[in-house]
Image 1 (cartoon, helix red, strand yellow):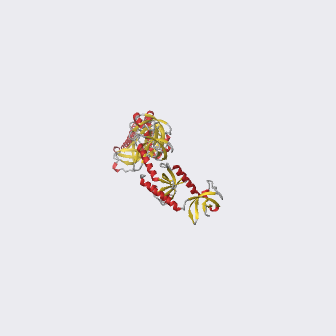
Image 2 (cartoon, one colour):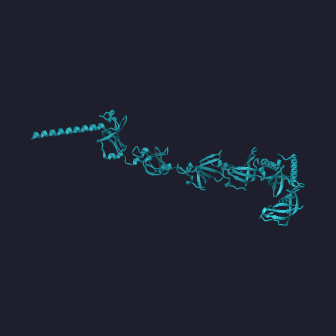
Image 3 (cartoon, one colour):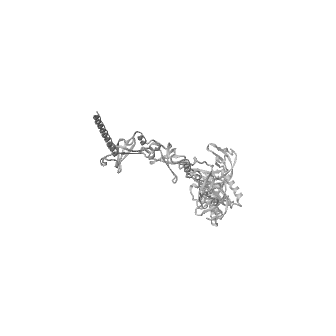
Length: 553
């Protein structure tokens, strides 16, 4: 609301109302010279003679210094203001005299030049027309219509700023307006903002307040917010780590919300855009030297040295897939060489990799190992299908079927994570970069043990474990199984056989290389038949010899 003639007339009326109300409230507000006739310390008061055989009561707090000592004593002359009467006794105040003297001094000093005078004071009381404001022991009157806030009881004690709009020497009154100050400040702020919003206008401001989301900067009477995204091209930063309140900074206005009256400022807009240099000088695949600036659980921020930060994700630190904490590999302030793997001009994001400049563990592994090598590794994890074993920075898979000759044993039954285990490199797949391991081949197989105590073409008894379409599996004990093919079952009838039934057969094959044993009932039947025939032939030979002997005799 603009300050106009009508408002000024209204203010004059209020000033008159204020003066009238003050006159009504007291008999005359006259200043007289009195004499202290009695000090009643217990009641914290003094009796002061003010003429006409009248004694007023003065609160001792009004005449004490900062140390609590009385400035006046019994019989001393003292100026007091008679502000009214109570039960025919004058109401007096020494403080009012000082305030009036201060007010008169203020009027004398500023009566000819008060148009731009701003006061900061406290509202001490209300009356019909408005409020009494005290500043530096001077009383000011502020009409209610010029207060620019809703009237309520809690305004007493409120600190305000207001502009002096009238000084009345005759009435010893000073009228102030909070509303006019607001209008003047708003007008001034608009002029400042209009100028700031012009292209390429850079101004120096002073940091007034720092918050977690940015800084409020005073730019010649208007406050604007520098959001933490607008401080540096690095991205969001903590302003309290870079600045303190009172610091001077160069800023540029980047936006103004007229509805919310919010001015947005930028520090980084004043500086050259380092991304222009990045986009023109760097390409993906380039190797650059950077400094570790910040380490987080998910990766590392690196400083390129020109207010640009790159990001090194935890997965790009090492070829080791089990990196848990970047702090185990890097420290803040460390210089490292990295490869640029992504430059995003739209989002101003730069991603780098450390591991791409390091030898690939698989390539090093292939150089130093071959299939058939026996090595020692560390179990890194156990799964339902096997165990992963780390060997020289590379993980190989030890499948359940390759942990033991006992088909019922699984890796997690006999191994623990972190345990060292000796294994044989069974296969190296260079295309898929996969390594297959074997442990059971380092152990003596049950068939190796079996072959030491059994020979081919000897009879053996076992228990039928399973019946298949192609033959019968027989358990020989101690983890050894053997197969009798259908064609080797004769003269037995397969349909009459049952699981768990004992069966006798001849050992047909012991293949330790392929870990296989084959039995044959048919061969056992042949062997037994041949034994009978040999016995018969042997008996017949003995009978013929005896006959010849008899004839010779």
